[in-house]
Image (cartoon, rainbow, N blue to C red; front, side):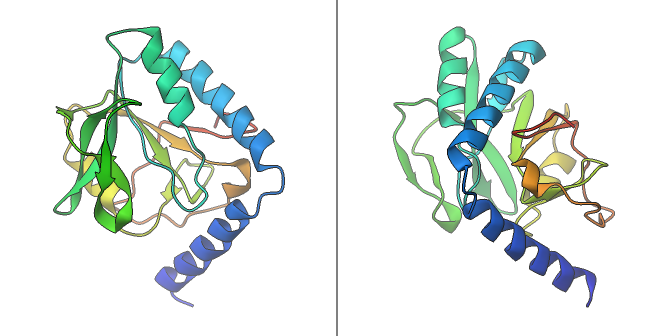
Length: 183
């Protein structure tokens, strides 16, 4: 089996396992607490995050509460522009529209360059490499951002694998937060 076929199989298996979590509410609550604590300790003022799809952990409530802590906090959701992501300001009352792949994106909103990106992971390994959905959007986006934001992987602990078998273009995350630990 070649590397691409192996990754595709790994993706499918892990997405299905994530969707089938029996104790999802408890695991998601634990992850949300960890993310909220991390955001407070990190002291960042702008965060790019994601609209949850395919069983990804939902951080919208965490981000709403983080925004309420300080009027200078800014959150942003990714919008696909060509082959990269552009982050547009988001708030809980902001209207959304269907974006690429049917994922909700802000209907309006200024472009933001976040200090920190909360990035969903299908899988991650000990070196903090990430397996996503295979489109390469985060890798291409990060390669062109300056200054480089802090990259924080978000996953359930069941997504931890021995090795992603990283490609040369894959970007290692600064930290990964799960329901069980910080890596």
